[in-house]
Amino acid sequence: SNPNQSLEEVRAAADEIAEEKIRDLPFLFQSPARRMWSSNADSILATMVENLPPAEDLAKAAAVAQTSASAGHRKRQSGCVAKERRTYQRCLNLLTMAAQ
Image 1 (cartoon, one colour):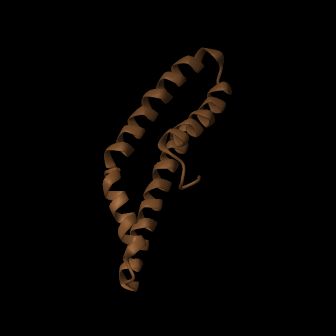
Image 2: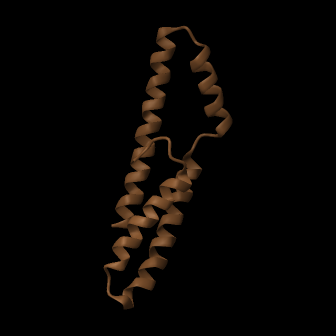
């Protein structure tokens, strides 16, 4: 779980985990399991994308963080980054759990 991974990289990693689990199923169940995984993972990914802040907001926040000299502002900004990382981690955990 790398917080710098793109959503596509996270999805690809989750797909690999799911495929490993699916290969352990009897052959008859593998195809339906793949379809279920794909549908569920697509839904989870769509929800993640819907809840992401716009890229321009993230760029503005990064610019403010770089130029700000206020210790209080830096503390608040680091709290936002920590919150985003926790959100990212929760989403990654959801994808991983769905793969199991």
